[in-house]
Image (cartoon, one colour):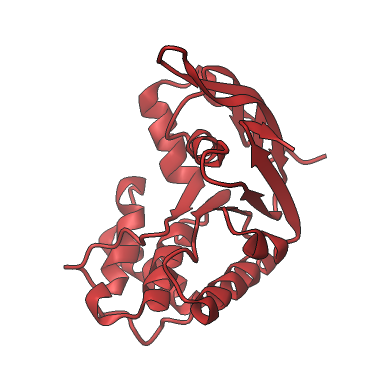
Length: 222
């Protein structure tokens, strides 16, 4: 059997307080290569904390996060940052694009810390933008793009380095229904092409469009 892309093994996350806040209470989750799934739950359910753990943006209080067979608890902060840069891609609700840069240069920034030459970065960025239907918007700045187009740029940035896993946090949250449906269709197309994608959302309708749903409530997977 192939090694899972991601394993969350009995993960707890507790934040200091009186009493301490228990955000995750023993979560187990496995994501295999080529999967597409939704992690769904209401505000305060623990799904955002789980996203931060899966994305190595936070460390669990106890339990293990394993990415492609690597136990991240054994890594220094520097090595963990390198793993994140090399093997994970992120898509955010608010796009997080640099308004002073073109679409092409926004996507190319996703390769800055990978030792890729400038020419190669731009070539890879162009290919990624073409794959999300924006081959004719390479030199356009985000302020001249629609919300759906900006999210497509953000998705291109997330996939440009061909990561092992793409984490999409409320990717349709700032979009109208029709535009959001187009983004979901794009993510499904990328999954069909081999991308492993986890969508984190509070939207049960969005989650229901994906092949697998995982519900988080009260810090547990139900």
